[in-house]
Length: 461
Image 1 (cartoon, rainbow, N blue to C red):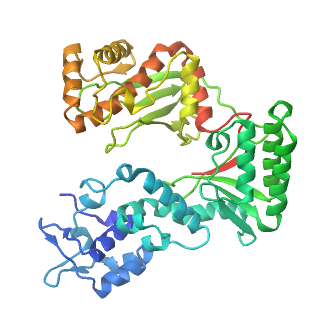
Image 2: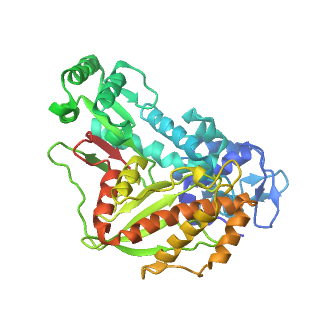
Image 3: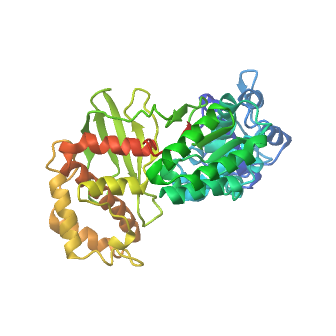
């Protein structure tokens, strides 16, 4: 059993989670190995009121340099350091962000936007039931709610004279003007500009909308529609009228701010990149074949690319660059599937882009002998590469047995589905190793949404 320590007092997410468990009437395990139903005492109510303020709640839990036993079931009392940490740190099998998936991401984005207008101190303040019902998830997002507004204020200043337009939910004339542009330019929204919000001057909004629509009506792709529209977007930022901002979940108290796709100053990645280390374990044990480590020879830093699936889903994975190998080691996020597809198509290849490849609704029902041979040949090729490591060589017959087991065991099917998708991407990199720098630079630029056709945006991460 891992108990909380004094050092854990500095992490408000633990306090938030403990208070939430008590309020929901859930038992909490302590040092004697038993679980107790703690009462909602005055001390607990006081703790809740300051649960995001480390200095204030520390005075309650650690008064006069002593841990105070404020947690009681009416008979026994316990201190913070008597509580089992495991259920609150992800070691106890609680609900994870992966399991909550897209629903949590959407709620986080909406609550982050709300935080620009009002302080968010507890899960209820977000207006999102998913955070109220999952205190651990709220704790993970709390930094974002607290420090994104500080970053936005640094960029914009006071928001009093600005509207905040949420791209995903807004249906006004402004977002309609952007939709008209994208249709005529034959671009997808995320591929063109990943901004989640547009912060726009209230008094200028109507004129800006009219000007953007005029550009769309006047120009064609052949005579500069995309460049003219992008230049206008950037000039609106320069004139402090419009701020297109991409929001990310923060992992530190100090948010990073990047200004991307400045016309005439687009910083396209062009690095010398090599394979550093791939792991290829195609057995049923271990995690999916998902993390690819490259070396940026120019900066001597690693580039991490992840083919990421969700453990509860028998589905198609996402491709994501978690560290770009630049001196600052930027977190880039998802690479658009259209970008991955277009890069692989240049080399006459393609990813596994549908669960139908394996079979549905029954797992692996369409994974016939031809697909078994095809994927095993990929495995044989990649493990011959000196940079690819495998814990245990898998024979063809052993692989066939695993596939047959996957057809009747959904948990193994989920694991093998992700592993085979990762194997396919690994095979692409190994097969085209001589062109690796070109391929990876295109993926990095794609993840950054950097190209001459992309619009200016500011990323907070």
